Image (cartoon, rainbow, N blue to C red; front, side, top):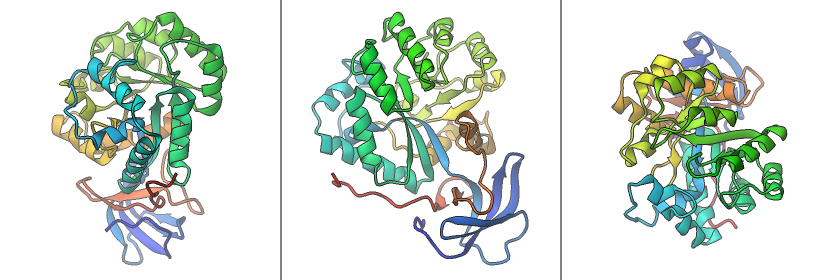
Length: 353
């Protein structure tokens, strides 16, 4: 049984992820604070043994879609029909949904992330300032960290609206250059960089898009790049831009990341769970889905894509903090199928509006 709440002095043991790889050892902690980390046998019986990593970071979600999953709809397996702004089915469902319905869906996804080891997620937040406020209200009583990448309500640049949403969020996360007039995106990108905020965008998800235009936007990261060529990926690597892959969401639409090219070009890879109407925001499941699709990446490489690499991209401490720091770690079984321990905060209640 997973434990979530503050506890007395305990020990966990196993393979601890460090910047130099995995090393056998134990962590001693009390009241959610680390007392000691040693790379030797635990002096007392551990409450959990397995793979010990920092809490996971989900680098791409659309968490506002969560409520749609409960409708049991026969969703179209066409990206444009389902998720392309402004007329995709999800935008129609969002427009006709109640605030309570959307918030409860978001809370369900937050609780699932906490239970499965994710403490930080980056959300592409639709619907302008209203979408930002909705997510902030949903996460207010949770210990989860949300990095909000907002977008304007319409596919157009309005200086006043962009100023407002940048003031209230961590940056901008747009659909793709195919959806927009490119000059509008350029203006949004320039303003985002002037405000020293994150700019990110979906790229070459279902069709190959112009990599030079994409790079002109100076994105912090790109999402998907399924249809990118080797030359495209090399240019992304040369510009030190990481790529977020979302294989379960791609699979729904009959698409697959080009794992071989990603490996060959050595781009930095992050992992996201994408649309919460299609998949649970469970990174353990996402990693195991990737393992079912390819053996190009080892389990330990995949684990780093949701722990060390995203922390470096976000300029956070890359590994489990040392003593006298918050116990920001999880323990997963040796097959990386099930979270055994996650001292990262309590769940939040639905209907708490």
